[in-house]
Image 1 (cartoon, rainbow, N blue to C red):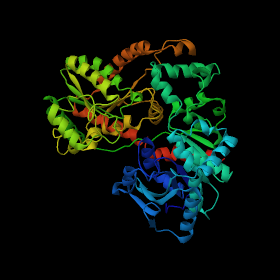
Image 2: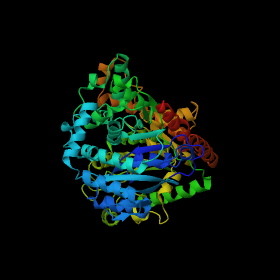
Image 3: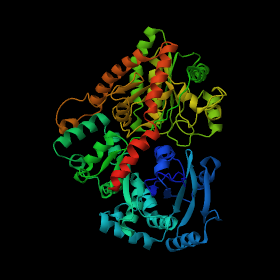
Image 4: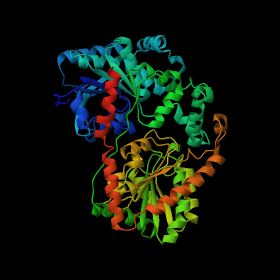
Length: 590
């Protein structure tokens, strides 16, 4: 609990999230940043995170109590821990017995702060209790759970909703009622909001925090025209007063869509990027009157010296020489998940144009793509064996433990590029982590993850769907060029923070605005051929900017370091909490 209560405006903020107990991805990064921001800690008296757990998942439970997770368990029927008051303990046991669930209550560190968490395992919840709740969801919100209950992801959050809310009530019993909020992070958090609305109408102000629009992502990813098609359709259709289902058909079979369509029932909606706001408005007329606030993600900002940067870059250059027997002048990077929305092929399109410029400048470069389809990466013993047997990561082989899924076609595209390029080569490191014990013996012994951030000259991130995109701009304060696309939500924040005067550090590829004119029906016809043409043209323009802005001496590198740090500082989590999140809560309160 936060001790800085003197200037608190909000008595209680509850974050309903699947990352309450463990950091799994982007929302976990958001929580770590926001919930440790000084202004948040000053203005919010008490924070509680509520989410699901699965005690049958051995790996999850081991990670939950691992020292690095910094979780202090105060009560857990699974772990046999009971360090709370008898009154609260009795309340927890009643909930567990009446719902057939397991509860965990404790405190967990988020950045520099510590907050309470409540986790509920409802995998064996009594069906009659769950079905009664589903019936009330239909009556109140029109959600037809019988269409989705075969989906385990839907059941995970719905089944835990009532018992989670009752556990929350037990924890906050006796606390003052004014200025209580529940923030639902994505569709996963909405069931707790539903339970609060049904059991205690008006007790909490509620906010839906849109970290993406789940309906839109598959439409963008699965269309051969990707973002070039979708965002032109969105703009042109809305000009005609049309909405998403008018254009793309009924989406009600998708459970995430069914849930997020209820978001306007909340007192407020937070959107992490300007395009997310547009996407929400496109979902339907009910969003037109909704209270939607932009709450961007924060950007990490660290001040380092040129000496620090060159030391990290030297390690990356040494690794390149160990792999390919040449010392590159420039080191490019792309740290991301290997999924279609990241638009990784666009990196290759840019390098196809840039390769000639580098030849003319008598410079060389390497692109390290640190990306894998396997979230936890590959066991170290597999990495060492592949390295010894056939030269991983320069050479790859299809099938486990090496290339799987999207890694296969992407590596083939890399092979084709490397065979014809002269000044630049691409290395796919399909692993999680960036150190010798994770990536093999040819990596410098003292290499660590921050080296790939600090030492990079350029970070790619030309996504086709990216609600914000923290990773794309993480190396900003380290003096890297950040090459992003107009699909990225961070573009709006970058422009606001720089007052429209972006420094040379930021290079934006516009794969949307170059589409041919016409109405939304013509935009719908944009396929791969048209997109390929647009991407080729735009990649050439991006490459020319990269060639002009790559630093050629120490003074140019110092300038990039200074400008990047200054811009990053104006996009910190403290800025987000102070200027975006807390004002959004104030509006939701009224």
